[in-house]
Image 1: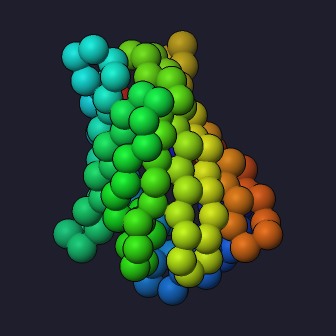
Image 2: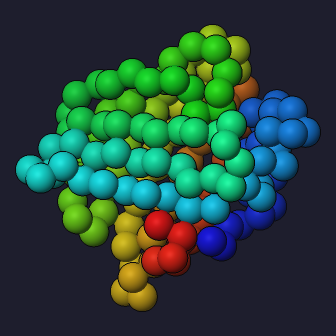
Length: 140
């Protein structure tokens, strides 16, 4: 996995995560498992972590809002809509209310080297963060 570490740190600070949550996000999430449904109308993204307490799986439907637990594990739910689902690219919009409400627009694209490039534009607490992470095949 390869991230733009400075933008990731800034985003984690913007989310006002605890020191332990920041360490977990920076060091323990080591990959993603992305599964598309057979008709490419649904998708599931599982964050792969080296610690057992962080188990986050998000499920999306094309053009339809779904709700799930917040990715940051805070109370409440986030809403997500898959805008585009294809075998080599997908785009998802997420939004959450409650403590530090915000939203993120994420794109997942397989590049020419077979790497999964995830780019998220996150807006929270009046700030905007542009985060880019590249996952190699062994990370997925």
